[in-house]
Every structure is written in structure tokens, then in C-alpha cells.
Image (cartoon, rainbow, N blue to C red; front, side):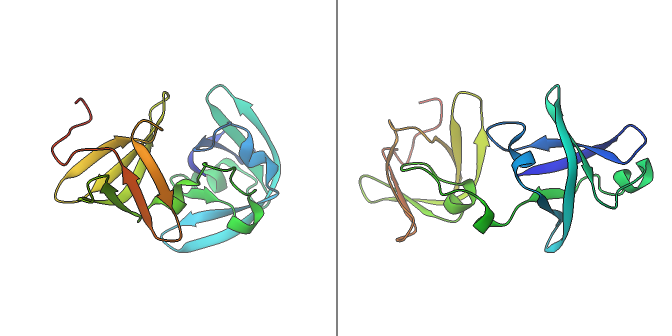
Length: 163
């Protein structure tokens, strides 16, 4: 849900780049999972606020600039069971990663390897024989079936994002 990008000031506060819809969404969760590559630890949120395009936070046990600096580059997550259910026709990005993508002709385009947030809309990164960037909008996304592990798109095999 975010990444720690820098220490902030001298009392252990950290600066985060968030991947949430709203900058302050992480403040709704009293315990964060901080780590990378399977090495996670729970950190209790003490205080936080929005500052320009970043989120600033104070975590229990992070009391000075050196401790905050040691967290730089680590990811911030929360447990899935703590998150609200997605609305109908809305998905958490991690639910989409790994899904097979086929077009309406039944041709396999690849699997979702990531998503990009462009400001206008999200974009699926689909890796098959090449990387395709497919806008995650109603005009192209015909259906998402999480149970079947498949997304059906109106997208030609030879299309590029500029087509």
C-alpha cells in the first residue's frame, strides 16, 4: 500500500509514497506490516498526517532519524482481512496480478504482471510473448472472473496501447 522513501525530521518520522486512492488511507490501519521479500514485521502507527504529496508517519519503536533511515525502501502493507470488501466491479490490484488475459476471440494475450496508475485510469501490464499495456476501463475490459483466474478483453493480438 506504500513505500517508505525517506526519514522526516529528526524524531523518527518517516515519509511514505502511498499506492492508495487517498493519501491518508493508510492512517485507517493501526498496525502496518513493514518489510520486503517475505521479511515483514508489525509496526504500530502512533501518528500520521498528509504533507504535500506524501504521507508522514510516526511508528512505535522508531524514535530517531537513524531508525527512520533504516526503513528507507521498505514496503508498507496491511493484512487483507483488515481491508474492506471491494465494491462490485472493483478489485484490489493483487487480485488481478497473475490472472490470464484472453481477448474476445479467445486468443491468449498473457498474464497480468502488474498495474500502472496513470491518473486517468489504471493500466494492466500483460506479459505474454511481449508486454502489452491494456487500459483497465469498461471499453476494453469485458469481464473479470477471479474464481476462474481470467480477464476477457476487447484487444487485438497486434494492438499497441496507441492503436
